[in-house]
Structure formats: structure tokens, C-alpha cells
Image (cartoon, rainbow, N blue to C red; front, side, top):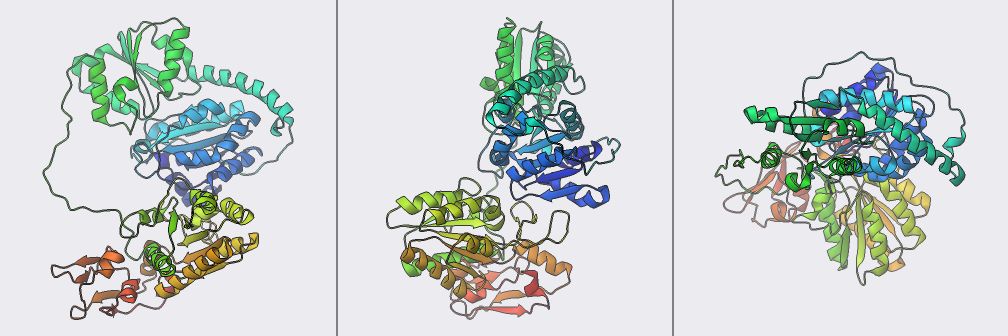
Length: 619
């Protein structure tokens, strides 16, 4: 996998310190390193957020240790403040910032091209086109970073991160894992120092540009002709495949491949295009290369006809059909029908849903009961995580979803401006540690009447069960202090803090109602914590320990087809029979038992008893 190749490159470059925050499609880099950290003798961590990861990697670099920080594209928004300043101070040991983008937003709230961050921060950007280049550029990035005492960034996208391919491995350099920090004026960015560093930064940028123009392995020309296609990153593979289908026509096309879009390898590109009449730029997302190319051509008084986003388009990730259309249009060839087969199948709709046994489902069910009991007009300020699925039927308890921690921040404003409505910020445990705490402090300081509901499922579930500060374990599998969400809330001065088990529906409803009553009466913020492990993780632990998983079934003669279990509670393990009565699929049931609790007719019963250790698996 491309991400595994990056991890391998880090090891081949002698990397000793890696930190990151999980986020698809970046997660596997840290996971791969964590799996071998003790064997390789390096340090690996999941940081509380991306900004901390970048700052931690920077601190390690200042002792001469080669380091890396990893994140998905939106994570760089969180880390950008640190990145901008680190470009000014420079680094000592090589430092690579790995950023994985998600074009077409398969698992993200937006689509952004983080190559632009390199442009505004003066941080060089590397864009691999396949897993082999991902590994090789990770090595090169750390080598050049140390050579120039400057942070480097690798910007990768889903089809490289999650593509698998053959990779030729190189030797592993011994990692440096400890060093000594030495003071220097350029590390303290007060205005007088920053002005000095700015001049050095610009000079260093031009030196790196010259180096990039000479990287023949990664920046190269293939073929010849008076028309050219300039491409970088994952787009290169699509261009090569589209051209391979054209036969002799492809021999007239020069391909200019770039793996270092920033700083733009100007002399290399200008030389490659000096005798070209027409140019097509194929790149994913924004016209970063296209814009720089047009500027360079104009300044060099070269006048080839340049096309790019006018033929390729802006939105969404690249596909072969999309690149094929752009290439054929550029070459004046007739358009082809998309090579996709339409199959006339009526596939049943499958809306997104919580997993069977997910404690979030029970929490949202109890939340609705509490709000209805108190007859409140609630505003549900949502966040990024599995619980974003609360947006859908039957819950409809996510009115706003913007970014990590945004639930708490937005609720602060709503608390002071929404008339006769109570804001309820809904956030997960990992996201609370990531970006929720400052918003809670703000709510207390400014007396915002709002409820913060923390859904603590003991892990970072959405990205694949990575540990967080509340899980009691580190990325490397070592025991760690369990950071208490309630302790943080009480420590900053929140007076009303309640904790409940979402599988105890009545207890959960009462706890939420108690916290909401406090908010309404006292006009102050309150915190409620729903604590129950992720169902996938709990069942996995139980089965690994050979603990019997309980099973629930419906007694047909008692079922009245009221639909509460499959409509109001909406468990995907519960199906509707032709007579509208419920049926539980034994292959999907995780034994949580909540359906039995909410059934008003006691028609759902436990038919297989749980084994010893079952309850412990959920804690």
C-alpha cells in the first residue's frame, strides 16, 4: 500500500520519531510504523491533534532526530499555524509532513488541494505517483530536509495512499532517536528575528528550486513532439494509460512528469517546453502546476497554447475516463463513450447506519427521549465522527456538521443568540481531546447555556480503532494514563457533569434530562458523558478471548409489529417480516440487548447467555 511504502521510506531514511492523528486516507502510515516501532527502535505516537503532531515532530527534529508528522488533508488546517512558523525557523534533523488528500470526499467533509499550503508557507511539496515513488520520495524528502535545514511536505491522494503495488526496498539506515538541543537566535520568532528569517527563507526556496530542476529520476521528460502533457502525482498514471490506448498517435506527445510542484522546477519545465506549440496540464484538484506554468511561460516570453482545468475540470478525483476525455479533446480526437457498462439492476436502498450494537444509536435514542420529556426545542450541533450518522433517520439529531471541534464552538454562538432553543453539542471522545476542550473553556468563561454531550466509545472508531488519550494505551501498545473527560470538565470548573451507560436507556434518559434541566435553569454549560466501548471493538475482544457473545431473538406471539425496534431504534440487525413483525438476524446481532430494553411488549428475549467477561469487553 502507498501509505505502507511511506512508512518504509521513513525507516530507510533513518527516521526516529513519528507522530500523527488518524484520518482516512492517511492512517496506515502511523499504524505501519507503530507495528514495528519497538523492533526498529524508534518512537511512534498518536498525538492529540495534528498541530501537536507537527510541533512534536519539530521538537524532535531540533535535537537532530529525523521526524515525520502525518494527517489527512483537513488536519493540515489544524496544523497550519505551526507549519508557517517552522518554515521560518527551519529544522535540524530532516522533517517530513505527510498529508493525504481525499478528492471526491469519500470520507471527508471537504475537498481541498494542500499543495497550496506549500505555496503560502514556503514548504517544498513532493507528489508521488505510485507506491514506489511514495517510498523513494519519503527518503528524498527527509534527506533534502536535513540538507537544507527546512521542513518538506509530501502531498498524496487516495489513489496513491490506498493503491497497492510492487515496491523495490532499499537498505534500512540506523535510526537516530536521541540528540541534544542547542539554542539559536532563529528559533525565537519575535518580529526582529522573523524579519531576518524571512530573507533566509526566500533564498533557501530558490536553492531548493534549483535542486528540484535536477531531479531526473522524479522530474523527467518522456517521448518527444510539438505537443506536451505536463502532469504531477497520481495524474501521471492516468495520462500514461490514456496515451497507451492511442497507438502511433501517442508517439507525437511529450510527457513532462513532475514530482515536485513546489517550488516549481522552472528551468527543467521551461527547457522541456521550449519547442512545444501546445500544452495540456493534467493534475488532480486545483490548477497549482497550471498557474505556475503559465506565469513562467509568460515571463520567458514563450507562447504555447496552454490548456488544463478547462478540459480536465476542477471537482472530484481523477478517473481514467475523465483523463481520457481531456487527452482526446486536447489532441483533436473524437470523443469516446465512457467505458462503463450500465447494468439494469434494482439494488435495494442502503442508507448509512450505525453498526449493530453501536452505543451511539442508544445515546441518540435516549437523547431524543430526554428532549421530548422536557419539551425543549433543541439545536443539535454535530461533529466529525461515527456519530455524524445521527444526521439520518430516524434520529435527525445533527443540525450542523463543519469540522472537528466545531460542534462546541458553534454551540457557543447559538447559546447566546438562539431564542427559546437549547444548543446540544455532540462530540466523540477522540474529537473532544483533539479540539473540543478550548470550546468548553470558552462556554464556561462566557456562561453559554449549552449541553456538551461526549460520546465516549473508548477509541477513535471512525478511522479504525486507534487509541486516544482516554483509552489507556499508546500507539506502540504501552500502558498509558487514562485521561478523564469528566476530570477535565470538572477541572476547568464545570459544575454539572453526568456520566451514563447508553445501554441503560432509562438511566441514560434521566442523566441527559438532569443535565439539560441544569442548563435551562442555571443558564450555564453542562457536560454529559456517554461511556460504552465501540461494538466492533468489544465483540472483537470477546471473540478473541473466547467469550460467548449473547444472542437475542423475537418471540413471534408477543410481537405486535409496533416497529419501535426497527423504526425508532433502527438497528440494522433487526428486519421486518411480511407481517410487519420483527426478526433479528443472528449473524448480525452483537448481543447489546438494548432492543429488549426498549420493546414495550417484552417480545425480545435473550436466547443465548453471555459468557464470563462479556461486560468487561465493553468497558
